[in-house]
Image (cartoon, rainbow, N blue to C red; front, side, top):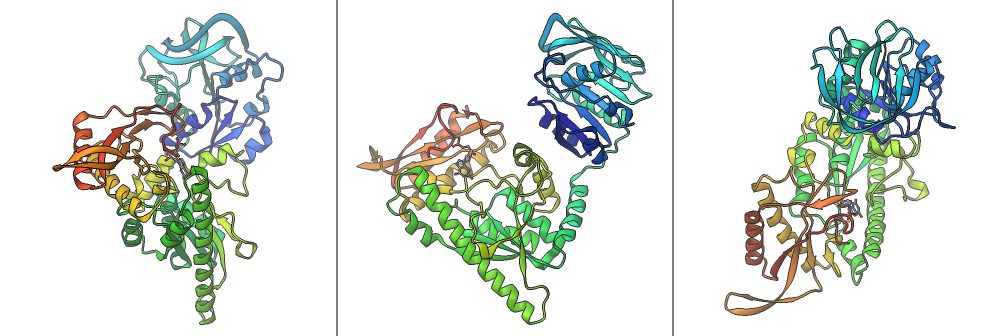
Length: 523
Ligand code: XMP
């Protein structure tokens, strides 16, 4: 892998993503990793990230100079660049010339490994107070800015490189090219990390892990569990059984998508467990959002457990008939790389998200986890899914909460209310898709204010119906969000259709709150 050593900046994951966009596999390691630990991973190259410290501050993370003796190509970025300069005998000082944001760079591109073919004047993204004032011996200086006499240096002999700016951010105009030049020309890292190669590698790993054992996987309708299941199916075929718990809180067409489209695309063994009545019973009289989530989570575990027991019993029965290994020992989880990094990057127990967490299973139903997406970012999961032939509706799916429509009915959840909301939601989704807004909008919850009534006039009569709230949001990661400024005519079409086609609804309102202070969902 290409290792990104994380010096505490928010940029380390972004660097890893950029490296992967350049078709090279990369991983983030903490700055506390020793040179031995780093070398044990046999890195094709190492990138030292930026970080908030000053190299001279007490306790500032340092780079062990032994790293530069190991023959591994290294690129230092921002703090990593300064730490590298200081470890190799250059000087770093507080120059009093801070540079934050877009900065003009003067580059000596000719013969430069990092900057070859780029304009001599370019705009890059800087964020530094200290600067390298003298490059270590053996390095040539290939760029300068007003606040950084030495803004980039290179030593082709030792394959050591550094830049003061942040090539990983989009504001650095030739940033991706700098990273690719380092990887290809500087470090000789091949461009071989592609969806196809990810699939081949994971298929091998899954086969090695599960052997002839049996595997179970819970499908939620979301992209992660679908891609994880499809990978395992490709690796071990009939040894996998997928369980889809239908909790009755899905949107129109979603259960069918799993039952029909997913099975058609993968040929997977699917056990559909219709538990919608149990979920409705558990939700009767419940109005508090957290109580709803708990009830749904509890029912989910119960349903999954019952389904899993059947899968286990079926497997034992078919093994008794001489058909393979009867023990179901493995459970597939769609854990992604950002979860792994955030939980410390360690191996072992997964940090399992969402209420589709089946970690609450009883002791006699314990499984070893199979996590084929552990190394992947979300966009890579989608690319792998597409390569595996999953339908666009599955791989391109917008986020949808595990508790489903259960937390989009404000008030008690009943069958009738679910039907009202499902119809209104289907209309909104249809119109948003028809208007080509699916990629502009992060997600658009449609919410039924089931305990609110307002007066309307429909046909010739006075009505006393429920409002529907549209909550279109734009976001990068759902941590923060803004309401989407979408075209009025699309809003008008959605409103007209919902009030015409859903008898119980006589008013459609638009939520114009950002997050914070509002959350994306209403509950
Ligand atoms: P909020 O409402 O917290 O939502 O701004 C942030 C993102 O998380 C989704 N969400 C959930 N997903 N179980 C889930 O699996 C939940 O209980 C849940 N609540 C919110 C929400 O749709 C948005 O994408």
